Amino acid sequence: MISSLIWNIRGIGKTPAIRRLRKLIRMHRLSLICILEPFISVDRLADTRVRLGMEHGISSQSGKIWVFWSAPFSVELLYDMGQVIHCRVSHSLLPDPVLVSYVYASCFMDVREDLWAALESFADSHDLPWIVGGDFNVVQAVSEISGGHPQPQGAIDAFNLALLDCGLEDAGFVGSPFTWTNGHTWRRLDRVVCNARWSAIFSVLRVSHLNRTASDHSPLLLAWDRDTTRGPSQFKFLHVWLKHPGPVSYTHLTLPTILLV
View 1: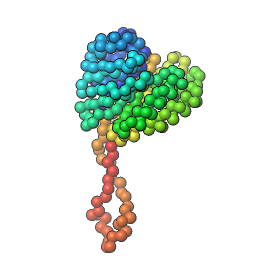
View 2: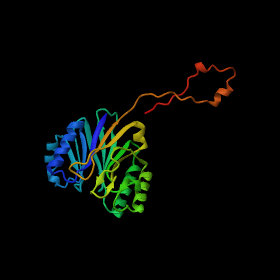
View 3: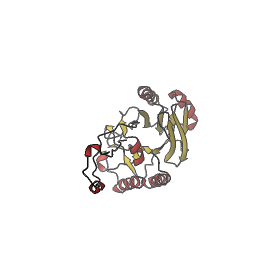
View 4: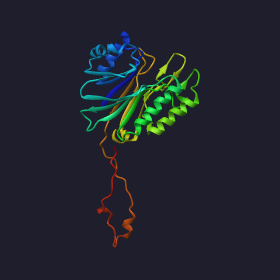
């Protein structure tokens, strides 16, 4: 099983935040993490990397998305598009690299339009396993909000349309239905989505909403793996059998099977 973490930490310079993050790294043996809203200067990236026990680290140009990793992971930054960075990620257990995008979306609906355009442009440029995670600052449905003012339906519709155009589907989750709160409103702002190619290769994908501690956002713990087990063979009747000149011995027919991956 391959694991990683995405967390809008709301300030990694705070002692409780760094302490919680180090505990999560040890507990889940994490070698790939993405931190959103570190709220400290990029000049402290190297120092933070050392404190977390990671071998490598990169930052988006905005300084709002930090990625740290160690072997057996390898990360190559492909594009920095403001509210999202696109990476090529390799792992010793994977035969080929995969694409991972980390999102920190704007609070403003009109600015998020740039994010949707960036995701759609990237989606059109490849046909590879692709997973996207982070803080989208918008929900997919009104059911993902409790308390406070509802999010504009136009913002929700624009988000869903962008996911549809990108061929991305929600990966689901376990844990609390909400990932952010200000004490009066609860929303699922943080999520993981993936394309069909990812789902075909990694049939095991679990996203856990961990407890909110040291931040108003829940850490997202990702665990994924390939499932190479075979399920029951499916029986398919082929019309060509009707043209067989003699009786058919079904016990000697080689029936097609479907590999569940």
